[in-house]
Length: 72
Image 1 (cartoon, rainbow, N blue to C red):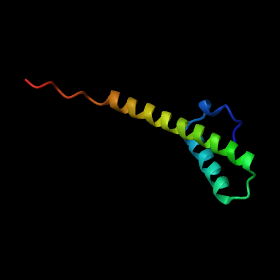
Image 2: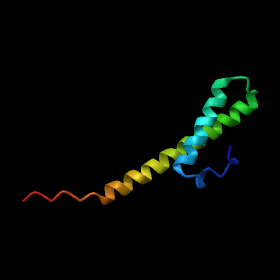
Image 3: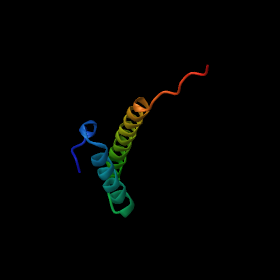
Image 4: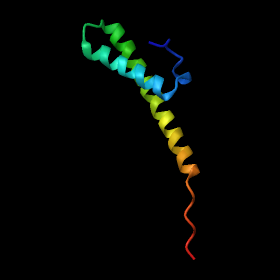
């Protein structure tokens, strides 16, 4: 897993892959409470990074699309 606090530097794919690992660890059980809480917080951060990257990509696509012509 990437060091906590560096999530802002991750690409979408990196954040998504790490988020999958976090979810798998949480779902597997057997993780102590403190570690579970840390994993949950990391997962929340990674999910936010993924959403931010997707929002940025959507904004770029929307900006690249031709604007409809105004009605006459």
